[in-house]
Length: 214
Ligand SMILES: C[S@@+](CC[C@H](N)C(=O)[O-])C[C@H]1O[C@@H](n2cnc3c(N)ncnc32)[C@H](O)[C@@H]1O
Image (cartoon, rainbow, N blue to C red; front, side, top):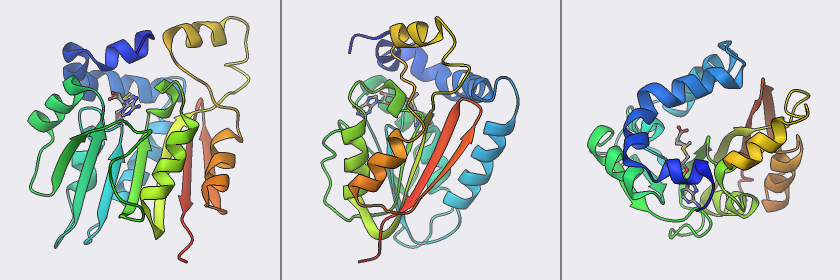
């Protein structure tokens, strides 16, 4: 918990301004001020929040900005669980993104305290690049996903821009990691998801994989 980014995630003030101010701005920055990332994000969320009786886990949910959306159109016993290790983020989540089909749990993404093969969809959005040891988290996402379910990640990717002198150093000092283009897909593959779809937009990547049904 030493980087600037990790300290921000623990801040009450940051958790309050995150959803309406920081996240929309940061999403635009990912496509360098353009709207491509935001557009992909909207389309993905519309797919992930389709009506149905599904179980969803939102890992590193922050103030529940996506957890709330993911749960919005669930039906029957459909339920969405958000986990995060920041008490400040979780208390904002409970206050601003609660609902009948939503639960929050304080937990470390490296050791998710939930059974194997539990969720139809497991998301981890805008978080892996802040986690000092992020690749084992991917194993956990795959472990708790049901066979036939989807694992969905949004994170950073190293590009020509981020290879410019100084950019990497500033990012590292802030606690922000840029993944090599095949790092996330490779780990998903090793964790048991052979077919992974990767969409690189600007400085970010969406990685979506379906856990084999058997
Ligand atoms: C930038 S926020 C992302 C929030 C939301 N998922 C989104 O897409 O906007 C990153 C979150 O990751 C959480 N986080 C970082 N490391 C974590 C860990 N090891 N276990 C659980 N949560 C973690 C932080 O507390 C923070 O709430």
